[in-house]
Length: 324
Image 1 (cartoon, helix red, strand yellow):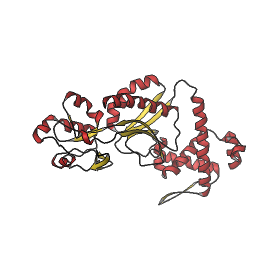
Image 2 (tube, rainbow, N blue to C red):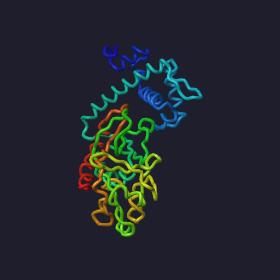
Image 3 (cartoon, rainbow, N blue to C red):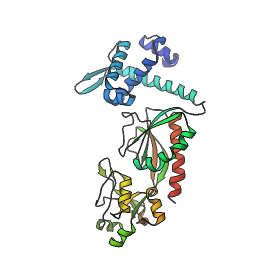
Image 4 (cartoon, one colour):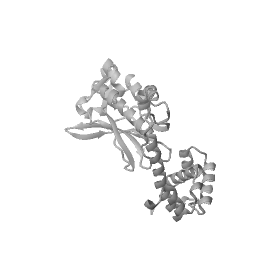
């Protein structure tokens, strides 16, 4: 049936609403409804769409009144989508995807993408790579703006309204779409002063006798990864200090507090200057992927592609060069 009608004509056929009535407010309400279903919460949907919750509730009520039926039922346990709501959700997702695709096709003919991008990435990636290069990005794309959320946690891309996330390592969530844009090599380092006092670890078994500074991720210490005879090995180091701030690990290692492991590009200037010493290089793990991630419910439009391509240029250039 869908292919016998245009988008708006099908909308009219299915719900008895005149094409002229499908105006900007209704499109916005459809997007809000889709977000409510996907997040399972009015408050999270409101946050993702940039409105307050009372406004979201009011717009949903207006949409249900316009449709002439109940789309979601609210109770003490949360939200339940009705049969009519499920039907309308399935149609809305397809219609909005077609609308976005049409807009993208038109915008692809423009010389510069435009809009506001919502991006999240780890703090050290933001401070060391993205932010210092933003002047070049904005000179290239003057009609784009960025909301940058710095977080060591994996934010909910749909619930938090994130367009693209930069993540290091393998992904566990298969519902997300990703593009590998680079890679990083992990290295163990210590200051010369620390090594004078406590000596160099010669093998992985020596780590238990050293003060280690593991990075915390999602509230837990990250294991230190190595490779022995071609097989991956993970070690939970004894922790003199645990922190979720990679820059704090860097500072603590330079101060002689203990051994740290992290991406080589964080420590490369100190390694070159001799203020940090790489250790256990014979056990270096395979490089970890750097990935640009976006939700499967969001198409990679021109703005997202422009940003991902730009970061890919940086990781191919600065990161790989500095890992040599």
